[in-house]
Image 1: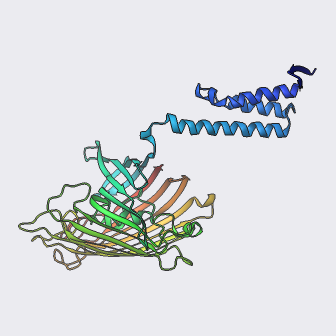
Image 2 (image 1 turned 180 degrees about the vertical axis):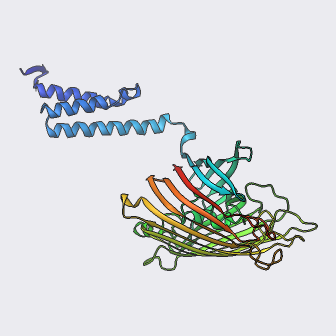
Image 3 (image 1 turned 90 degrees about the horizontal axis):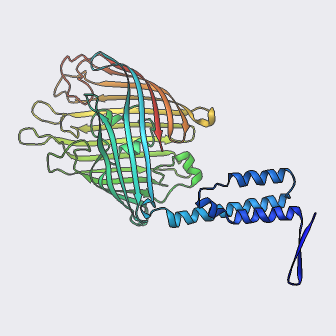
Length: 441
C-alpha cells in the first residue's frame, strides 16, 4: 500500500520501490563513513544484485546505484591517499628479483653435486623524491663456501634526471654504486640471467656494478608503442641508446687497491627504427688497470666488445665478439704480471612458441673464449666452450620457470673459468641439468 505525507503545501508519494530506492541511495552516499570503520561494499553489491534480480529496482536504477557506489569508493580512496598514507610512502617501490635453483651435475674437475640453492635474492627499494631526483638501494644474498648466506650490497645510488638536450633524450644519471654500462643492457636482450651469467661475466672479465658516476639516455626519443612490441620495451631509444661512466674499477664485490679510475662507454645504434625496430648494433669499451698490484705496477685492463642483436615478438638473436686484456680483478696475467690478451665470441637465440599466448619459449647459447691468444703462458689449446639450451614458461609477468642443460668443455691447458691457463691441467668437462624458478615484482 502506498504511503503519503505532507510537507508545507506539497505532497510526496512513495511507493514500495521508491522507499527501497531511497534507502539504498542513502546507504551508498554514506559508504565512505562505513568504509572508514571497516565495513566493505560486498553486502551492498549483493543486496543490489538481489533487488535487481527480483525486479524490485529497474535496470536504470541498478546502473545508477552502481555508479554512485563506484564514485563514492573512488572518492574514499583519493581521500585515503591524500590524508592517510604517510608522506614517506609516496613514490616508494619495493620489489624483488629472486632465483630458486635446483641443479644436478659435475663441476670442479669431476666433483658431482645435486643441490637446491638460492642464486639471487634482490630486495629492490626505490624512492622517487621529485620529478628529477630518486634513490635506489638493493641488497642481495650470497652463499659462502661454508654454506652460510650473507647479505651484500649490489646497488646504492642517487638517481638524477636532467632535461633532454636536443638529440639526447630520457637521460638518467647514477651517482654511487650503480650499473656498469654493458651487462644490464645485455640482460634485457638475453632474459635468462637466472640460468647463469652472461658471456663476458662468465669469463670473469668484469662484473655488473661498481662505485662511480654515470649518465645514460636514448637517441632521438623513444620508439612508438607499436614498434616497441617488436623492438623491445627496454632501452627503447628510437635511434638507439648510450651509457657513459667513470668507476673505481674494482667492481661491487671488492675494495679498490689502486687510484685508477676506469672510463666505460656503451653506444647502441638502431639503424632502421621505422621498418626493423628490433635491429641494434652495440659497442662497449673500457680502459684502465686491474685491481691487483704486481711488483711495481698494476696490469693493463681493457675491453672492446661489439654485438649485433635482433628482437621481435617471436624471436630474439644476439651475436657478440670481444677482445680484452687482463680483467677487473687484475688476475689474468703471466708470471711477470703482464696482462694476458684474450678473445671470445658468443651466440644466443630465443624463440617464442605459438602456444599459451607465447609464454612458452625455447632458447640456446654458445660461448667460445680463449684466455691467452698470444701463448704467453702456454703454447695453446687453452680455450673453453660453453653450450646450453632449454625451455622456459612465463607463468606471471616477470616470473618464469626454466629447464636447461649446460656443458662446459675445457681444452687441455685451460685451468677453469677466469683462471690463468696452466700446462696440462686437463680438466674434466662440467655439465649440469638445471631447474630454476624466477620471481620478479
